[in-house]
Image (cartoon, rainbow, N blue to C red; front, side):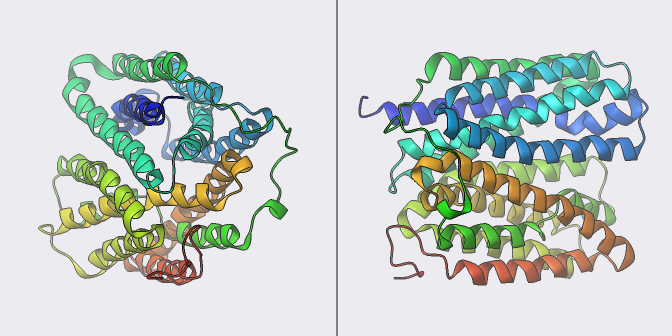
Length: 389
């Protein structure tokens, strides 16, 4: 393999991810209205479809990671995942009643089979000196694709309508699938040994501690929909809500790569602690600020939190996991944190309704502090372990 081939491969993955997220976010802003207003579903149905999607995302990543390690193949899961996403949007466009959406929603979210195998390829091609930058680049392109998709939705929706918009949204993901299929070569594994699958015996104390602290954090990291609802409580104009979502997404896009690079320079744990700090500022902002003049700042901190957290999470999982089980470990990690995110939003909603707006944010601050404390005891591979050592 040529010396610069790993960089070209990572850039190809980043470009494909850009196109896929563009397609996803073309329809994301109008999805709830399509389900309820066009197909006549109620809010319970909308919640069912979205909840089903989140559960499938978590499970599909774990299954694909395990299967990828087991059959010693990665590439097929990536391009097939993009193809599934594109196909589901075509199905959405031709759905006449909400029940038609169910199989296509399953197909759409099952397309996340791409994530763990793709991340395993990136981790295998990277070194400790550039792994954070590589994951940061991919996350940056994810978010830039999302920004582009939202803007296209805003510009085109009133001109072409729901169904044509959904058909259009399939095209970028088809481009992403093509990029992977034609430009990515299947990576050779270091040996031909057949692995029976990942078990807890293969994971050391560091990995398990890192998994636990992220699960604790995920239990308090509820959906950003709560922040949008909070913004609405400040009597902002309805038209400003998508702008706040754009501020969050654009901030995450601009800072994902710099934070990935910073993690390569100063270590993974300091950047992850910084991400916890940004989330703490989000919670404190909701608890303290009551002026619409400052609400945009909360979404900036939320974007900074995502930009710092996502690249370093994947980097540390890839480095703490056994090399032979990277895809399984990445998929399992995403499954655990994803499944914890579901009750997080559910509990936050209960606390919001029965106690008050402040309650879920106080709970989240507490869980974030616990996670940050546990992170101090995780040892980074290739370092003395503690920050500053």
